[in-house]
Length: 369
Image (tube, rainbow, N blue to C red):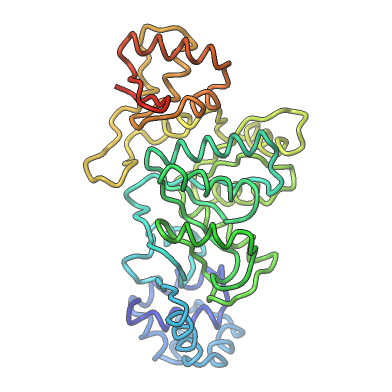
């Protein structure tokens, strides 16, 4: 929290959320305190505010901001305002960045690591559940930050898969952190906060509404290098996130699905409209070959293994090779990722071992040599 935090809270309480005006004011007032102290004359001269905005600023005393700060202190909720060094730079770049972020956990280094937003239907099919689990787990295992919205279905599955492999995941809420929303996921949010972060642009007790979830989507895409839609119908809110990602100049990925399945119609349409089709987590990694994947400063991805096209093995072995990483991967995850029969996967693994391209570890785990 910085000295300017109270002014950012005051501004958001007065003007509302998902507004572009904080960004506009940042270029005019490096110190938001100067804007506050300038009063109505300064507010009008800024050229940013409407008459309704000015009236709202008058009607919102700074004491309201102090009340929010006190509530956050009571609940152990952190506050990161627009001018805070911890505020993600990539969020400052979107059209309507939040003036304030409220959080539980620790803000990750979004600028130094690849982050992928994962979204999809709340009513995931068996195919969607398996796919989100494999993709999120595989990406998180190599150091990708998984960003999602904490909802049921694909969101929760993606968060959980990242946690299972010891990865980093970010949960962006469409309500205040302390609001009793979706109590069945309270334990998941608590676990996420222990290693990653749960965050919101709303004060701790702010209630959810339809528009808050729509507004939340811009933060999922804004915090991500790209957004992966796993499973979605034609009217899914996940398509809003994909559209927002395009507006923010983020990449959009979509999992290919059965053309007759309702929850694949949205993802298949995204692919027809230009989204990158995904059948394996390396389809995403290959878009960012120079980005750091783990937290170690020197761990730069110079050449992702999937780019190696000169290995002299069968087609099946080449598929399996793409599903193995530098960290040990269980045979079940490999089988799920490639979609081949277990016996075919075993043959391929043996072939790769004989070629000294992979190494078997205890517990039916395999890693790249």
